[in-house]
Length: 95
Image (tube, rainbow, N blue to C red; front, side, top):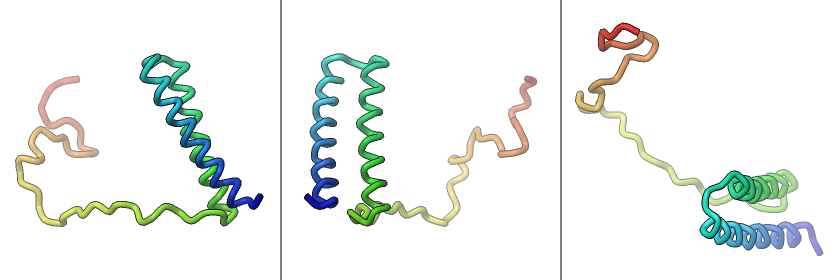
């Protein structure tokens, strides 16, 4: 079995594990043990992807979604009640 095939199979197994963990989480709710299991599956997925990329066994995911940010001025109301960074509070209240 080639390394690429093994990585692909591992990805499929991780997806199956994710489905099982999601099902378990819906039954057992949000508890520390469940959060650790969810985190473990996510960590496995990240580590396998990193391994595959560093070994040239898979291509990175397609182009990530880009969000267009306009460079026009924001309306003055956008900045209402916002403190200036580095200057401190502007509301006059004593700490």
